Image 1 (cartoon, rainbow, N blue to C red):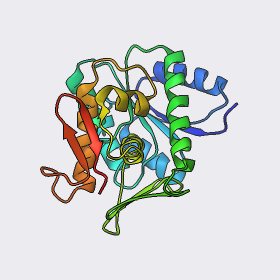
Image 2 (image 1 turned 90 degrees about the horizontal axis):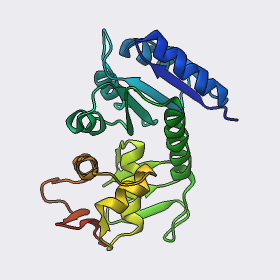
Image 3 (image 1 turned 180 degrees about the horizontal axis):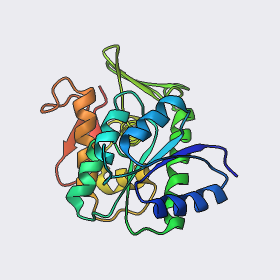
Image 4 (image 1 turned 180 degrees about the vertical axis):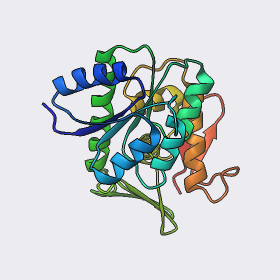
Length: 233
C-alpha cells in the first residue's frame, strides 16, 4: 500500500468520485480540486507527490494550470482530456505534462499510469551512474540524479520528470545513438506506438532549457532517420 498524496483535479464530480474510489483502494492519500485555481491553492498548502489534471475546466483550465505549476514544481503531472487528436496530446506534453490519458478511461489503466510515474520519479532520484554516484558531468552540463537537478554553466535548469528522464538516458549513453522508440519506451515505460512527435517535442523542450543555441545544439544531436545522441564532449 502507498502513502503518497495525489491531487486530482476535474470539474466533473462523477470523475472525481471514480478516481477517488480506485486510488484510495491503492492506499493513496487524496486532495481534490474542481479547477486550476483551486489546484494551485491546494498545491501551495500541501505536499503533493503527483497531480492528475483535467484539461477542460472553468476559471483556469488544465493547460494553464500545468504551465503555472511548472514554473516552480517538477512533480509528475498526468493530463486528462476527452480530446484524442495527437496535436492535443502534444500541446499538453509540450508545456510540461508527463503523461496523457484520454477520456473515457479505464480506472485500472489510470492507476497503473500513476504508479508508473511515481516509480520513475523515485528511481531517477536515487539512480547511480558509472561516472559518479550522483552526478553526470558533460562539459558545463551537470545532472545530479540524487537531487533530481540540472545545471548548465552553473545555472539551475528546471526540467519536468519526463524531460529529466530523457536527458539522463541520453547522458548515460553519451556518444551512442538512441532510437526514438528506445527513448520512448525507456522514459514512458510502455510500448512504443507512433509516438515520434511526442519524443521530438520533449527533445525540443529540453534543448530550449539546456542549450545556449537550441537551433545549433551542443549537447543533444539529431541523427536523421534514427534518433538522438548526447555528444561525448
